[in-house]
Image (cartoon, rainbow, N blue to C red):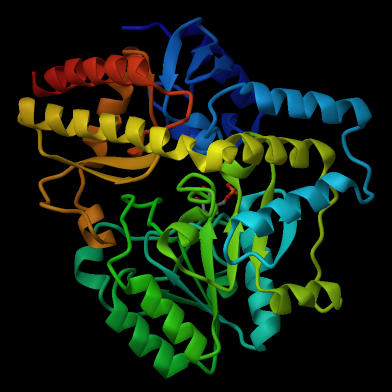
Length: 437
Ligand code: PLP
């Protein structure tokens, strides 16, 4: 077993000075201790105790090109020579917005923010101002950031019975200190259920400003949309004057240069992107229909942020995009191949070791679950997975030098290759044998 003395000691100290001991609540979930990083390079990182890991956490998604990619580092260095932020316009903002309109099929105009949460807040505001309506439809198991107006938690244990019921009773605040009133405009629906969607929209369209949905349910099981589901969502929203927002904070640039909506051939009204866009630097964007984005130009909708579009963030995003779009985005087939090799390999190890498990994959992101379900294709079946067993697996894997999120979601980067895949599969095999023993 690896000793994590430095991480443990730092964590004790950080709890004295840092509220909760971590900078983002989710990070405290890591067992046996929230790891302290020293440095990262490509697909690997080193912790404060000097141990090396193959990294599938990848900063919770942004590091699509791995740690310290030369193009991003040089882009940032070049920008830094001129300054960090001016609170004035600069050419990098225009270049970035132009590139996004070229690459993302639904992007007629762009608004730049600092985080996925802020992008979602802006998209919801635009939708309400555009339609003059209040209610927002969102779905069980999706995550759209931690703003009061959208952050909900889910009672997973009894979801199997209840998730087909369209009910506002189930809407629970995501955190203490959040006003229940902040959620009174939310309608919560099961995802991938076209009937529930159609009934709700037809009955309530006079009040519904927007639907917000992840295009793939990455935050709960990496579940793909059923054939025709998002297309039906598009038809209904168009017919009923409801703004369709796809939250591509995870899938944007991860699934392809055109995001999930490009891949699926969809044209939502608004799309939020973040994470991979900045390659590890804080930046996000709302992109979409010009007539809706024009609400910002007209002054109807405020879009604010001291550091919005700062030079470092735009340089990082431009370098990321330029790298990903080389040879027409050829890198994506290699990326998907690496992820598939891992997925197929782990599926083989499930079988070899007699372990019941499922992996759902969407390109370079996948969700691994220990479950006796035959498939995980909705939030109810997702909730049947053995959460404790996976956390135990992730903790063992840490000691084998493989860093994964304790919740089952794996991110893969362009820096991962066959060597990492082979090492990872050998480690997973050893851990499976431990779990069986
Ligand atoms: N939307 C989705 C789909 C996400 O997965 C996340 C974060 O994981 C967010 C929004 C919020 O992004 P951020 O953490 O940058 O605020």
